[in-house]
Image 1 (cartoon, rainbow, N blue to C red):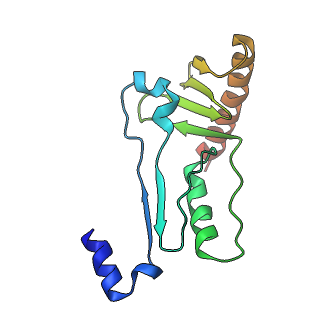
Image 2 (spheres, rainbow, N blue to C red):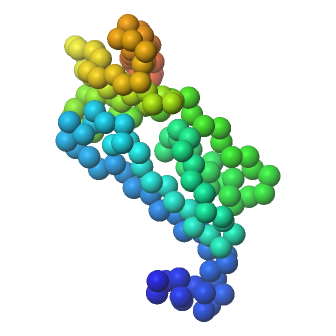
Length: 149
């Protein structure tokens, strides 16, 4: 409140954009099995913004594009992501894949073991397994490419 009051008194409030976000910070393995764990806040506050909520699937890499879309006229807002892959936390060898509308795949991707640990939002175990295999290949391709650098 004091910061807002000071900015209003100095005339800077109307030129200020506040951005608040966080990491998920959850290290418990059981919590990694829930889609809610990966729902992170990204909050913009500015005098010229209306109050809205966006439930579309986004990745942390969308942050700069969302910021630019607000800050610069004519810059389009990024499209929603068809999927988001979350790696970690460190030491767990888990890769979580979130898909729309409510899909979650928790994958274990160690060098010697690749397996589907949990699936939600898929019509059958067979569809979840096939989808998991595709994402595991994509993740391994990604890891292989960056391992060569």
